[in-house]
Image 1 (cartoon, rainbow, N blue to C red):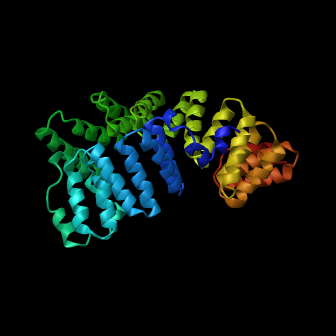
Image 2: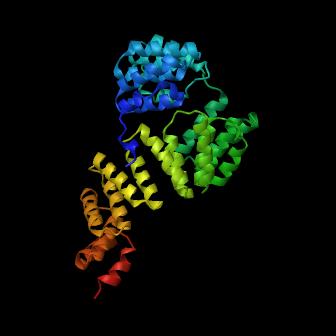
Image 3: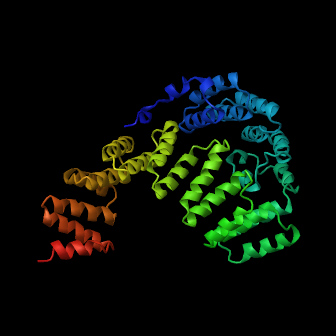
Amino acid sequence: MKKIINLLFLLIITTSVNSQPVVDYLLKAKAATDSGKPEFAIDLLNQAVSEIKDSRLYIERAAANLMKGDYSAAIIDFNEANTLAPSAGEYGLARIYAIKGDAKTSLFHLEKNMNSSFRKSEKEIMLDPAFASIENKPEWRRFWQKNWYSAIEEGIAEIEHYIILHEGDEPAALLLELKKEYPGNDELIYADALISLSSGRNTDAVNKLTAISDRINEKYIRLMAKAQIAASNPAGASDSYSRLIESGIADAGLFILRAKCYLKTGEYEKALADIEKYLVYYPSDKLALSMAGKAESVSGDNLNALKYFSENLKLHPNDSECYVDRADSYFISKSWDWAIKDYTMSLDLDPGNSDVWLNKGISLLNTGKTDDACHDFRKSFSMGNKRASEYISRSCIK
């Protein structure tokens, strides 16, 4: 197994700060916080901010302090972020004071956020559980009586809502009205592409987004990548994800998204490299370990594939999919007895998988256990797997 699988957060933290870019600090700190280890994140970021002054580092440390329950330290960090990038920490301060039940102070900071380039969407704010304790207070209701968003922003939010509800022609009709009033607006080009994609006109969505493809806008580029994948253009999507990664967005998930594209284009080494980068931050992630094993398998290295699958099983012993992954690897290498054991374990956890019944039957057939194999073929067929009929007619009808 690649050494990265066994990396511990302690090793991450002792890595020389001077050799790490800001994004790497952010990714490692976020991974520690996501794993319920805010102390690790704080230790790492303490070292980072002693060398680099970047508002994002303070915001991430504030998040770790917030998870730890140290509101005072989080407030200090958000205020420090504000000194480095005006208003960068205002939303975080609004959240903390809302959690504390201080509606007046929370809304003071939220107003500052709303008047800045860091403004959150209404949907994001309304769904944020941090504001639950003040959302029934009169100050909160008065705050939302003011029109904080432009007609275009409100229109796009309504379009997105219609799309989620599958409201037929409503999104297109609303977009048409907005286009008449604001022709050539980038946000409306984005909304137009969003409607095309939701309607299955994937290539049309890509073509529309091409008009604003030179913008370094995370929202636009993510939609472009999604449209390119839907339009069966994983190579284009991998380029889009590369733009996001190279722009400095601290999202480890981008490595997984790009790796999926590389797997579709047959660039297995690139895919594995991206998955390994992700595993540095999230060494126990089930999907990433599964993808790594499959990437090794399709590239011909079944031994390393088995190592990834076995590691995944050790970490997720009650997950049927992990048994299937390893069983499939044994199946490919014709290690029938081992495949049968893992397929059996998978079926104990999830007996409704017709493909597993079929593959277990094939494995049994190859070990000479025809009666047992036929039982599995018939089980698979009864679940609607038509491929099982070939094996039944060939091996089970006498």
